[in-house]
Length: 212
Image 1 (cartoon, rainbow, N blue to C red):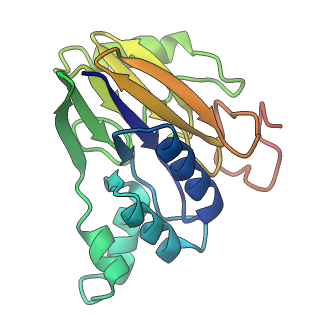
Image 2 (cartoon, one colour):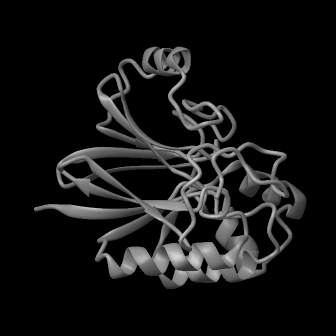
């Protein structure tokens, strides 16, 4: 039986694009929604963003911004927000419709910082990066790997694994739908914006390469 999985990442405490993505995915009839981390950071709507994820039953993992949030707040805070972020797992390792799926923020096995960057600033594959990550993932024993972190949008086969980054709802204006067991991906643009396949840090106030 085919299953549709909604994929989001790098919400960065910005409510409107996250809300739109979750609404679109729900209307599309997805069976599950997975978030590849970095719910926190940059924006100032973290509380409401977390509430939204909870309301939609979204399954999320820890990103580097969540690690930094934990470091800043320590273990003293008993606020529901701190508990939510403190309880986020580093990875999700599961099987859906007969396909093994692994989700980590940056790269396996548990990195939140060593991101899989495949695209140049215009959104085209960098052959050397493609080759390097194909070699690094050789022997990776999962059908699907879902990552975030690099603010790039791609679904590429690296070795025997389909590696997917749905992009940032905030910066790339994107989310994805993954159909299993077919291993088919659809990019869903947000707010009528052109999907920015590669967004670079430090350009938040400027028009990113390939932007609208």
